[in-house]
Length: 210
Ligand code: B1M
Image 1 (cartoon, rainbow, N blue to C red):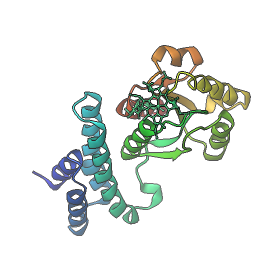
Image 2 (cartoon, rainbow, N blue to C red; image 1 turned 90 degrees about the vertical axis):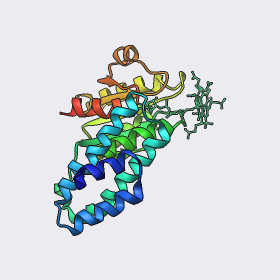
Image 3 (cartoon, protein in one colour; image 1 turned 120 degrees about the vertical axis):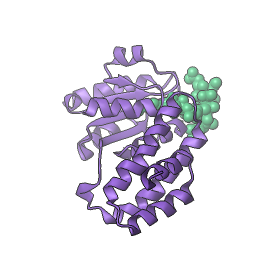
Image 4 (cartoon, rainbow, N blue to C red; image 1 turned 180 degrees about the vertical axis):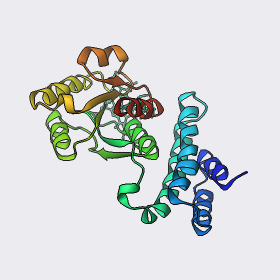
């Protein structure tokens, strides 16, 4: 088994000490840092995404995998110029106004970061004006809105309306998710996409940003 395959396996198994040691060994052996990321760490995380979506992996296991991935990335970051760091795109994300649930959103953030997205996580209880401000400030390709309450999901519509009012709607894709959300709700409020889970959110952002 190649070191790249072994590293991917360590990420899949959430073995963060193993992933750290092997990443260091591969650096010492002169492997290209970007190849270590793409063919080792990200290759492993891609498998995690597929298994999580299929229900073959659970939240705690995904969190361990994300930790394994980031211990490797931390060692590699100083060796890669910022401009060469692989990025799949920039996404501003937050839980909408009135809603304090963030466990699922954090999982979405972890999986998307592991897939190479630059994420600006605004936190919870984010009102439409704060999303608008963040879009102006960071110029992301997409914003991600999370809601867990039937009472707060309407704030997603308000956020889209606020983007329209500021003339920003055409410059940014809007992706929504959370337990009460559905594709038909996304269509109703004019979002660009709905994702049922963290792996689907990553795939969806890859697709719409590309
Ligand atoms: Co609350 N809560 N809660 N809660 N809570 C629910 C959501 C509820 C269904 C429980 C119930 O009654 N059965 C219910 C909502 C009912 C409804 O609206 N239909 C509810 C309620 C009523 C409330 C309060 C109003 C209770 C009260 O105070 N009376 C209150 C509201 C507070 C507020 O937000 N203003 C409240 C409070 C809380 C806690 C603070 C105690 C805590 C949150 C802690 C935290 O998040 N830091 C909490 C919790 C933990 C839950 C449950 C038990 C679990 C939610 C969770 O973390 N799931 C939940 C019941 C349940 O779901 N079984 C419940 C695990 C997580 C991994 O899944 O968040 O669905 P989930 O995320 C998934 C997908 O939805 C998706 O990907 C994630 C990973 O695969 N996803 C996205 C999420 N965001 C996405 C964004 C995307 C794409 C995909 O794109 C951007």
